[in-house]
Length: 238
Picture (cartoon, rainbow, N blue to C red):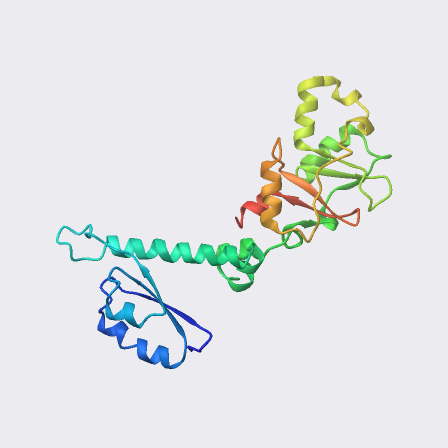
């Protein structure tokens, strides 16, 4: 598995571990590079390494000063620092992480796009603004249960939206007179929208950081409605 293009990070507090030091000559014969993380800069491991990261340990946390405790934590911290530094040098992005780590919840969260989680337009309440009424719209919000109504004058071009939150605010302001309002005047004609190719993790950040936070947003492609995305679907994979 090892080739001349590889770098071996060898960890050994004393640098005299027989199991580790027996491997070093074979690694060197392959012309692979060795980075030693050790507390003994004059150890056998250090002397055979191409680069030595000296990590001195005065005393282990173990009361007998025997069990590796401080030394293992220090090695872990140095390893993390190396990994983070490489990420910055290589400009490693979430998309790269998802490509090399597609499995598990973290990989899934980083690889999914809005299109993978959105509710397609065929299952969305898309209404003709000229034919809709505010009374029917309130009923439709409950019927569809998505927390949003999409209005179009010429489908699939978006004209505006109405959400559960909009209705609550209108009720607080107008009470029973809400049914006398013109639907054309109360819909949100400039809502926040997202594109289907946006990474799901970025959509989550956009919706949560918005003031007030957004529970649902329309998904547009070239100005056409293709679906809606709910915070619920995003949180299920976050």
